[in-house]
Image (tube, rainbow, N blue to C red; front, top):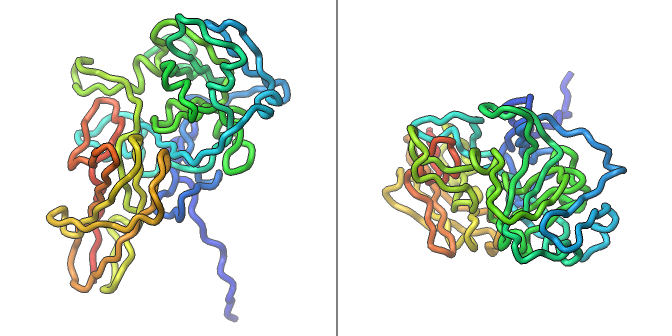
Length: 355
């Protein structure tokens, strides 16, 4: 007996660790520029927090004229904006650093994108005011635990300088792709900081505090810092803006292909302006051709790109992609090595064999 029915085949998240849960988006198998909640990568430092959303409030305190505790309904009632924003873990592509660095060995899938809806921090602060001495806003999360190398318990907390916090596009989000933000991605409220690596977009917001000095929590002063030297901390600087980058989604690395015409495709993104061009090489970087950008590049979002490749000769090929943004930033041949493995953005490279 023959069965014509074929079972559904679909991609799943790629598990890196379960305690805490860290799972990678199967970036090779995504089509389009919106990632559904099922395939959105998961990055955690601690176990998921426990709290009662029905009793949820968001206090804003510290150096404000009128400290206020916002209810969810108050936040929902304020003027909102919806933006397509890419969130990329600062450790995305960490496994490709050479020499190797310690930490979660992310491949190319610690990145996702979708539509975020929420209220700008600027709008919220209209209800509280800011004192003249205000310099930073600290965002504290409900998730907490022990951090290796540090005594005691810490919540995941990060700050933004006043200028970035007051950017109209820095929002407290409550929807993702027109639905409430999934619990594992920060429900009911999370910060979204466009153009910065995703460690800045704090999930499960518990409290916002305005301070008059530089915040020194461990996830700001120790982690998410570029350390260019292996032996000491000289020359360190904070991880902030996303580097210009691209990823080849198809073909797959080490794939065997028949002779023919193929559509190579992928994505490109940057924290500085827009992507202006993506180039591709099928000879290991000796020559480059322009790719077709699928849409007009928009700020804060990745852009899909394609290239028709005529693979009529047998052999092994090294295919590379290189993106350029409107600030003139170009993917380098080699990444800036750093001890914690942040901000990898070297020219993407895969190998294929044509038979």
